[in-house]
Image (cartoon, rainbow, N blue to C red):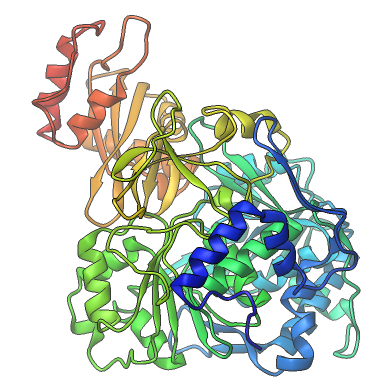
Length: 639
């Protein structure tokens, strides 16, 4: 099975790109013809970015799981779909063929149906990286339920907020999860999140760690018992629900510039095409290759490039339960060696962390199977790119430096492995279907090359965000209101003399910590919930491993508190309210914040001080109390 829409030469890239921008309906209809449809579309595309309203393959009907599983059964049913590598290398791995994946997804679909899950219901999934997580996601899609996967590191409060926003009636979780040396008590976190909840009807619990858990009669049921009750033998087929092309497929919550997480909604057909097309083209996937994306399925990268992209292409995807540094820093290289991995897609944070261990963990590991390396989550710095290229790729593997977002559904700007040129620290060229523009603060488009500006997208692509769940106005104001008729990414970028794009970082109040976006307002809200805190301001600063660290300026009610104990208490508050991912790296106690006379905090000044820049802070005469800046500068030296 080869892919008729795989780009093989740079000439073909330019030709396909031109076709996709000038005639998007014809371009995407030709690709869509290679998928399974219950009913073809009446119209390929209808869109405007003012409302915003985006519809792809209008009137079409399909089920994404038939395109990810059923259509492969006759040709590659006995080939591995998922290779699961457990947290502990001493435990047994699992290889799940497409036939087995089909059987498992059908059985879980029956389980969910038996529990009362119907088309359109929201199912929150809070599990470790076990194959059952993949089965659960795909079973939701098969019956038409909307899945909302929550990363296993989020706190009970964060889960409660997401459950309430999604109005979820069903939860799928594990008793616990393994993550490196840690055992994470997932079910007890869910129990805490459900305190006071009146909408959740059933909690389905998969046994992984055998940690003792509380099971509430009538609400909580064991996965294993329900799978037995499903009584589906291998010959039984669970009929996939016919879905409209624009029915929601999933909600994925992402942090924003206000404290409340927003539920990004992706729909059936456009998302499927985009995940498939970008996977096949960016990684230049060839049938039979082993693809290893190290992301957790709780993030969009896991959705698109552990599950939907690879499976829709009939690929073999590796799913890893653990972390790159446990039981030692050679774990990724052990997995590459063990399974003859051909494509390795990971985050700059992981690469920088592994660089710190030197080359000893690479000794004796055969990495010769690697053909393509990939980077995701944040711009990769040149040092990490060069280390990755030299020591992992041995100078023989193209590195795809992919730029995209939860809201875009899949990769938007990237070189195509071995087809279009790579350039260290540059995402390079847009994919077919993506029309990027750079604008200045007034929204004027910057023409030509060698320019810097705010990155916008001018034309709809199949996986364009459709809405934020139950709050379409928030979607409009967040993404489409800043610059008329454009999707605003929130990122700054530069375009070089050859038209290559380099992402220069966020231009709004969102931090990029280890490739995960965290709103400053969300962290501030959590800090301010501590009883001893009057006010706080949060900014990002350069961090050797994470890319960006979190720097918090905090005003205390009582200056007599022991500083270090107060720091730890504030960190615990943030961990409890959001999760460990959002804990501040540095906390500076201050008596005041630099504010204008209208009360606006001058974050620009705080950002510069956090970055160590204290001499060129710009005009401070407009501040209510300019003297507070000198005090903050002096205090920063001690943090």
